[in-house]
Length: 414
Image 1 (cartoon, rainbow, N blue to C red):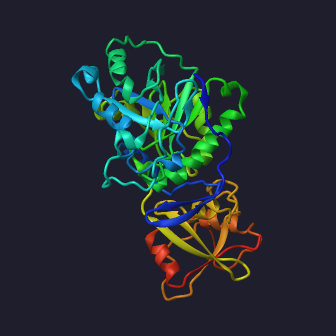
Image 2 (spheres, helix red, strand yellow; image 1 turned 180 degrees about the horizontal axis):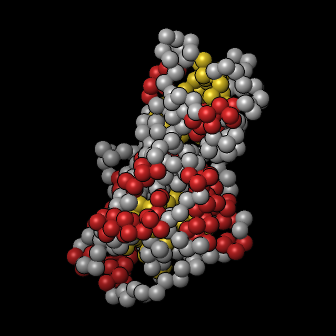
């Protein structure tokens, strides 16, 4: 397969999230404070489908509106076609898009999409959309459709699929990794997914033994925004959630190189029902071992609402950052490069120390400081009496309210 896709680090860009305009920095990372049991709810959340038909459109993900069906007659038609009994008798087929081009098959993207179109807007007609000719691949078999999919080839595709004898054996050395980056559908996927895509693509590109056989592609909405970053790996068909950009090397080593399932991040598998996914998870999770040194760093919970924090620099200036309920203050600050957090949030360094100063009658809504945190704060260069490791402070609505009412979050000088 001939692919063309930008693997360069993403530049800083403005994006919209829950009605707010945010500046997304290329150093995006995320970790949340939770119990290890919080990830058990992931298993069984992958949509039930037998196969996945992915269109390689060549359309940048920033141009994807929230609902692709509103702007793409071909996408709409394929969804209707794959639901007819003759096509779906062997199981549900889900249709999706990627921004990557499939060389020789992705020929025309038609007219530009309006990314502001919403689910309540009128559908774009075939005449308005222009000619769409996309390369397509059927997963999990990773079988390339031998001709471009377009409105003119729908009957050809139906005949091709109905007569198809799909191979049982799969080349597990070749892998296609899909990361949801659909910002206009939900900013958690747009913000976290985009950075995760970049981190995975960079790691693969810099690993010669993988670069030839492993491809990383953006993909549109796959469900489970609160589990961002969401990843699918084919041909295995495994779906993962709560993967952060700093997990990229761990993810590739475990899932790609060692060909193992990361059960504590596993959402399910293409071809299995929700019940079968949960049964497989329950039978397998006990086999997964986690290095105790990394256990705290790898804890996760699903993300909630967007929250705004106002920070005060050492010289008194104010800067605003945006985070998500459920992550730590460290994640929001590190995203914008205001703290280093060398250890990744495991309470094993002091490079995320900031001062939380009560400037109102409301006390800081945060867990009591632990002995481990106190030990690390001894090494903070510009420590104050009110300094805390912000990796130990959950980002909550109560904290945002404390900050809005006058509570000061003061950044260190160095």
